[in-house]
Image (tube, rainbow, N blue to C red; front, side, top):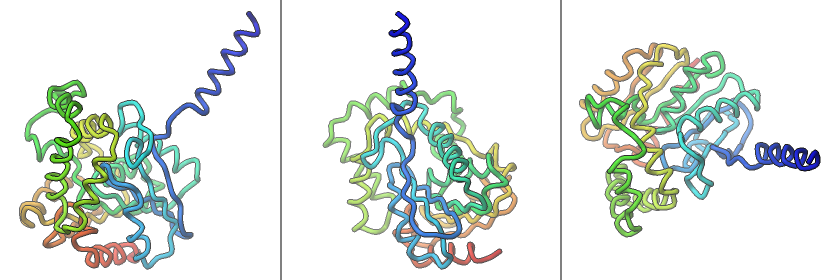
Length: 279
């Protein structure tokens, strides 16, 4: 009996230490200022390799990818919150200081969250077409409590056959970039996603409202917004949602949809380089 108890304890320790699927994967390249590159929903960290190649400052790039996407094993829900917590652990375990974070879309949400949680560690953030509360734009007036994993819409999405799901992925991808050659790339990223992560992870994002933590952020912030559907409307949304963020600059990319780095790459590199060079 004693031997059995010891065995069970050892098995528990092993399962805790080795059986847990990581919420993030990282690729580290270069040396210099630590920059965390946080991609958007379904997007791999490798999307930022061209940004890394075009940055003037020497930097140690941490290209992050998420569980459930790009062939990474999925994790249990809640998805977004687990990723955020693991990123905080990642920063602390690697003793990273004076960090810059460049985040696109959901990656911008994570950058905002991290800057609010670690104000003394994160000095600058670049938010690329990221809005603090998507729900307010997509479902005005709908409270977060109305959104649940177990919903009719989510069940429909989970039950979709691959052909039907690809049609949905195609329509979404066509609305996210003006670059026709990049549309197929976006479709492939969506199709490679673990379906439950895709469906339930998106629910996590719709429930998110980071307007409540903006006043905790001290990091200097550059917000790059896409002009779609119109520059005037998009800029107004940014100004309203980021009202409580103190140290910010908002710049709009003309003739661009969600993936600014695809639609206006040279403008994007210029803005980021100028921001990082300015003390």
